[in-house]
Length: 304
Ligand SMILES: [Zn+2]
Image (tube, rainbow, N blue to C red):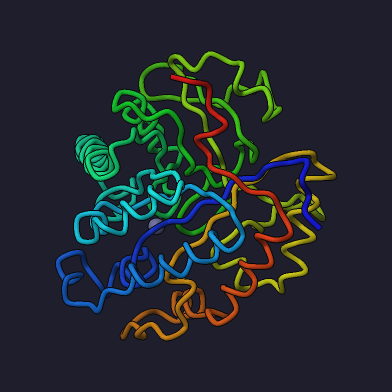
């Protein structure tokens, strides 16, 4: 049974297994061309699941992947999905300068637009790395012509987090000097199409489930592979029905690939997070697409 009354957002972060932040210490950027690429075949598996379920989603694509697999990017766009930007080289904002972020998001946008012939509106920071120290990212996104961001994870985590920020879509407004705050005059997703977007960025944060006085990540990635599916389904239904909110779900093509080469020298914690239940992702994902309604993020924005 679909929870048809609420359309959620499906997002896919298109990067390869050796590009994840958890492995950045053992696979630096200059070594990437030496790995067996699997992103094209794995993204095709995701595309097949989506087409079998007649679902359209938003693909946040790494520039490095777009440069090497242009036909894949065109295929994603031709199948009706939204193409958005995940940076060029999967560098966390906390590790690069504002100037290099500026170059990165402009080059990434142009690259994807040239490939698809369509405007790119959305950005997701590698490892959700917009943090209290990198809020200037919103200035840069706005100036580069982006209209929304989906990088805020309102929890505490060793890699990311803005724990006090809302966890359902909201506008972010500038206070000047690189400082930005959530603008909470409207909490209802349905209202976003009526609000003029000038000078503000729409944020689609990664949702959490509020339970037992804590916030629990529930909507994708390692958590989707960790929890049994019935628990994910229960939590996401709770967000749709009890909280009356839409959520964005996220997944990576490498999570559909139990046969991927094992990275040598990774720390135990990273290994456990990365390789857990890879053989379960596809069947769980197919169930998820049946159990919930999903769409593209760009469809919630007002016309430019
Ligand atoms: Zn990523």
